[in-house]
Length: 486
Image 1 (cartoon, rainbow, N blue to C red):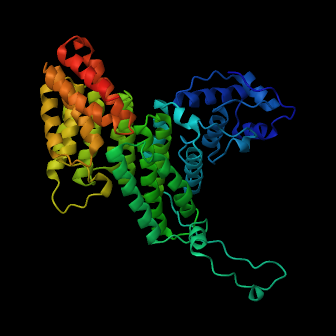
Image 2: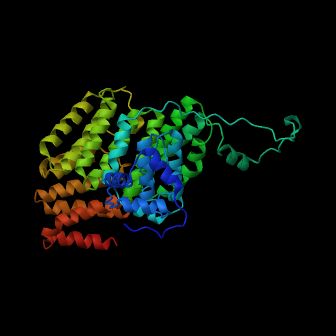
């Protein structure tokens, strides 16, 4: 690793913390390298590197944040790169931290919103880091609940030398100005504010389902920056604060989901980590399990099956057996998808059986979290179709995919597209080339009407599977139809 040219001022802050922690130069370098491995980074620092830092050189990229994390773990208090006399961490690392306090969680996620809202293109190019899944999921599972999230307004102090009684009242605010002031930091958050956040979440979820994550993602991020952040920095009592953090977690997870759908995978990963931390502040263990399931889905999509299994199991362990049957079905189905991508037939089948039994145990009138209500017979059939496709059990895959398409509402356009491609792939695997190409051509047309990289990738996956049949008439017809779509 290369560092910037040396500065003239020795780094006394870093020297003092090294002494307090009892590190040798070689010991600190070794710990930084080990932490780097947790985040998928191959670092090669040694005692000479630490000597250069002490002389005033600034390590590049993510290293300042990693050094700060090493000291945080050793000393048991949160330290930043600036506390060590180092430059702030680069965006490639920022967002993977699992904050120590709710206040720090707000600072981290708000910084992520602001960077994303500002159309920083480099954020969307950050790579997904499988090793970066370990620490947040572990901290969520074993971490202590936050004792308090309430924020009380700061007392108003009259200006010196001027009695409060002599203050001239301000003129009434115009409606637009008043609205802006009410959303500013210090505003007392109420039930209406949280209801608005929830309604916005439903709106963006609907847009995502029908048109893809890229359709309104940027608008969602700007809403988080300009509306949600001031609420989090406002004032609220304990019950309201828990609900507020829960709504913020939901919108942040959705920002991650839409980022995932446009293939901004590193950015999506960071949103999911922060949504997990906000869910912990909300005291909503079940929603935290849903965030972990979302992270597992992304890992499956990217081919990291082992990490996906671990995330699904951590989610199950985190909520125990007391969750609603629908939630249990969702968690087991997610584990099945991970086993499926690994080709683990027995483990996948066992997880699917658990999912089916859990959903069968659901009864009308059960209290089901709003975020789990999508998991119904259509969704379970979809999961079964994907798993059997991955296991190359094409007849079963076709049966379940057809059933899902029959049951699934038209509003879930992207999910229907995915399932149609699964059905096309199953038909291809069964040698039914005409049907496979007809189904895939229909899906290709729908994918072009969406702003979803995943939709395009599903179609491309089918085309790769079609390659051995490229000279057959149905395959040629498929290519002509897709070419005509433009």
